[in-house]
Length: 328
Image 1: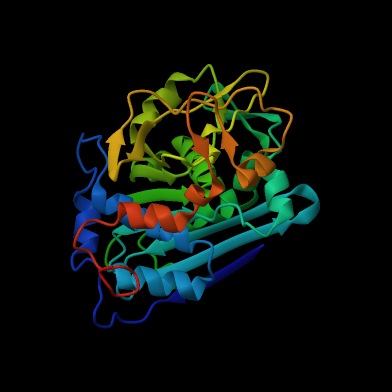
Image 2: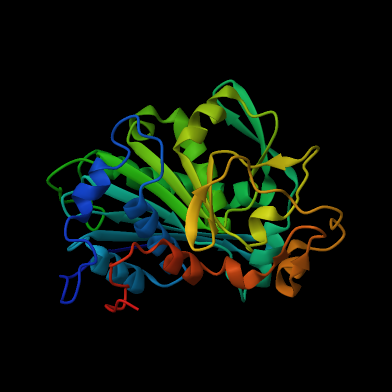
């Protein structure tokens, strides 16, 4: 297990992307509104994309977004033989009021990471007195770093700086957002579900935003999961194969939460979850995604559309500069 902390430096022109980012995140999902927030979607997608980088890069990108002088923590655990590759970032605003928890997704060059994704064995997740069937590989990765993540969230809830827990910030955590791309999105969902047993932290959870998230759980969905689903906002590019890959753990896995698809240049709320591919169970998901899959009567899927950079481009609000400082 490795844990790194750092305090980000000041923001320089032409940044920040959002002058009032903390206030925007505090206003979003503060009431009973359940629809996605474009600013939250853009910011969490940015964090999800750069979760594949090192802590210095993540801190720099979040500073450019508008978290000037924030704290950034990286928690990681790798166990090759067990296909455990779990990396989480926590970003705490300088004032302490907002925290973003982001999970790294599958690393393209890491075969063990792909094999862990393909481990669709059935596991059981306890939610109070209810049990939920979950993807074994994803759940194992969540558990590898879960207690360290919860410890950091408790520090934020106590009003302590995540850069230096011996010091305090101006405010305790008021709003928590959890996010991730691909495997990271699956881990974001499972960690958020586990927080339901931790009421002080769960009460601060505003929303969960995922991008290209695969299936994570099987039916029947307990009532607590159906209630949680109102906070889950899943984003899917039209030709991204990962959310459409079929999986069974004694029964089919199912998508839940609110789904938004990028079609014809727009994000549209889907009336029903993306349809899963059929009759391709004999091939590993990684192979299917790499070669591209054509589903008769539907569309051709390609791994290119699973790339986090495409999600970032599609989610950047019109008129906002990029993380590189341009408007292209």
